[in-house]
Length: 392
Image (cartoon, rainbow, N blue to C red; front, top):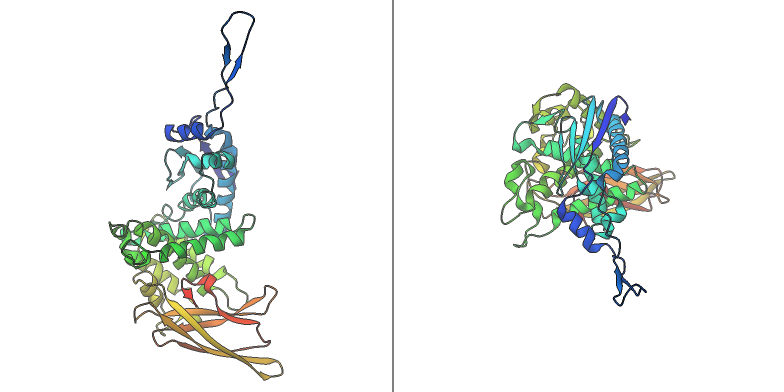
């Protein structure tokens, strides 16, 4: 199969690994044992049911190839040309995937039909999402992790965070995609806020830049939850901050990513490399401290810990026939004193029409704001779909 100029090859074995095959046989409804009397003698003849047909991962090779082709084409529109002339996809046993230059490993479950996974008790909503996201995640590593690598374990979040976010974006293009995207991002937020046995949130285990050191006996899920899922949120928030305040266009953000991937090709980059590149593309509204740098954002979300709780107080009043004043304050809690963020505030005019009023600088002392709008909003709210926070 071809995706633009990229040849895609998919390989799978004709049999699944024993652990899946045994589960398949155990959960497959067997036929009935039939006993018949014959005229040939006094003994009955037992007719055994047909054996359960084995799992055949090769049956869906075309489906996997189609999914891979769609992902490659979509990611080319976001990140630039596919880095290699060929992409080989190979089935591997287990529940993991990996992405190497021009090669992707996918678990056997990715090669099985939805009905087969469901029959084995592996077809719930979470399993379906995981299977859907895994293909896109590993293909995204062709750009994030292979075309551009990472300098040390402290910088690996760039690879995993962008691949995780790319997979979520790819899911948003499917049927009911926007709902699925929100479900994925909310799931990641819930994971970060979930508690360890000691009663602490998983996110509090340490900052993103600690990498593999986040996994320990007190927080066994720390590495995956923080480096993959929190990093995904960091990328999403950076995209939201860079969006055009009037049109909502993402051109600035994805243009920045394409330029970074192009200029840093075949390099192992650091967090500071990416920070310095992002600085070149920041908008005046993103300049929280007047330094002309996003150092504040990375200090808060990559080098620091904490998920804030925000409480909004707002008042709207008409100040002229065609103008309304929206003013209020945002209170911040549950984070360190030095935690600061540009919080997006939106006006909801009903019938699905939402407009970002602006970004509010919120710190330990809160964040006051004043916006004008030509119509009275039905509701003014913190844009929690684009913010890793608890909004009260």
